[in-house]
Image (cartoon, rainbow, N blue to C red; front, side, top):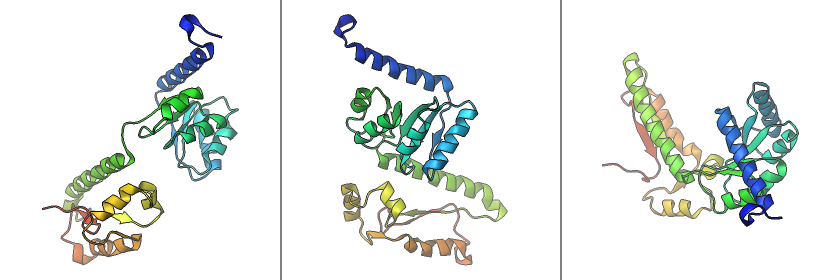
Length: 230
């Protein structure tokens, strides 16, 4: 069946549904973004938010088996979304589990088209994961300087450690072990390319000891020479 101007009626309905989702999100103004350790915590937290009047809620793919949480909540009458989407293939799973919108911090290829095909609103971002990571680290450098300035007169030193390519789960979540970007970065590091988190302990012990008492407001790179300043 076609509607006015030959537009399929089904597509018009999906357009209206997506517009309604965006309108609900805008009307609520504050949307809880839930990053929890497990499905049970996600469900309980979402229901607590709903009881407080926040019925548009974003769960995220950082929660293991998050689709199970969406499925558990789909009959609660909530406006559910799934965030931290990194691949278009994740959109269909979100739709089948009960999500009505998907969110990403960047713009995965095909994400918007896939969402629209399933009647979901799509909210892509404008950054790459590495770009967001870089922005967050600049914020850390600024916070270190600000806190060191404020607390230095009280005898409290504030410093930060900026690690390189760390060989642990957190490091691989930031940049996958088999990522060509990781390989390219490693190729440009003149010293030690990568290391376990334990290799950061030396710098930490220095800053925490009397030997580091004269160091304040610094972000110390422990990265084999990845970042070097003149």
